[in-house]
Image (cartoon, rainbow, N blue to C red; front, side, top):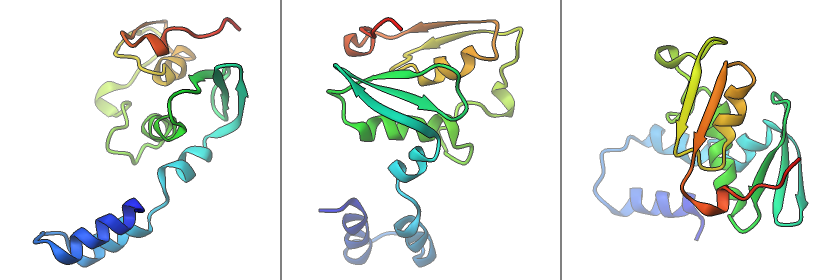
Length: 137
């Protein structure tokens, strides 16, 4: 069943403190995939990876094809959409050209790729093996 329908059904039949207009806002907001695609310039399947170019980044991201694209889209929104509650770069964590960034739990590496363009150096640590086997480009 569609997640939005599940959300609406829960709102109708369960006790909750969500206001009606908040419900409408949630039901009619753009989906994560629609938001994410606005930041992507191209996405191509190459062997075991998707090769993704972003409108604001110089280098591509390689994303394993065995991980659902919805997971990628969530990450893209977190990294690029400043209105997302999980957006990393806020006033208290501004990164500049003298900074060395340590990305612990780098996952797919999108944040690492983004800040590599404007920081002094970036170190990325990720324990999941499917994110550590990227092709050389």
